[in-house]
Amino acid sequence: EIVMTQSPATLSVSPGERATLSCRASQSVSSNLAWYQQKPGQAPRLLIYGASTRATGIPARFSGSGSGTEFTLTISSLQSEDFAVYYCQQYNNWPGTFGGGTKVEIK
Amino acid sequence: QLLLQESGPGMVKPSETLSLTCTVSGGSISSNNYYWGWIRQPPGKGLEWIGSIYYSGSTYYNPSLESRVTILLDTSKNQFSLKLTSVTAADTAVYYCAKRGTAVVTRFFDYWGQGTLVTVSS
Image (cartoon, rainbow over all chains, first blue to last red):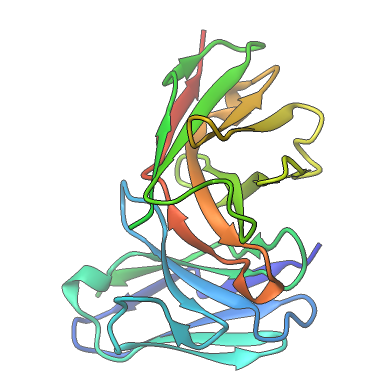
């Protein structure tokens, strides 16, 4: 099973600042990597797939990069609605595995 | 717009069977392009894939749960279901139903239900 490791566990950021979240795979997953955002009491929402393609309706301030084993989600200028938990998921190897999440909180 | 909605009891007694249904609207579960699946999230913890089912009825389960899980399709009602037997407190979680594609490059979860909390308690 591929293990997905996200860092940091918690990221404290001021509104308007940039946030950079990392996700590492224990072996190559090519570009088959998705990012999800989850707010309290809500289901996860797909943000990014294919490591860098924004899902429908996702603002341009969200961007993804990386391939192989190292991936990054960048939120260019944090808005109040962006404070949430973010999960990465590899889907290169069935059934796909999730990272433990990064909580982005207000500094 | 595809919508998924979970339904079922919010509380189950230890050793009994957890049963949930996911009703899909805005699309057919008989499509050969999708897997339909269940994911759970214990309170305050991360996401765990439980299993998936294909329109043909082929099923795929998390090895850690395989001995206790059954996922079935009901194409007449456009629903799929989850049964988890012999539950314990460790099965307390929010249960989500979700859709993913079949091709490797589409196997992310793009549609999710709102989730339903199931508590295992006597």
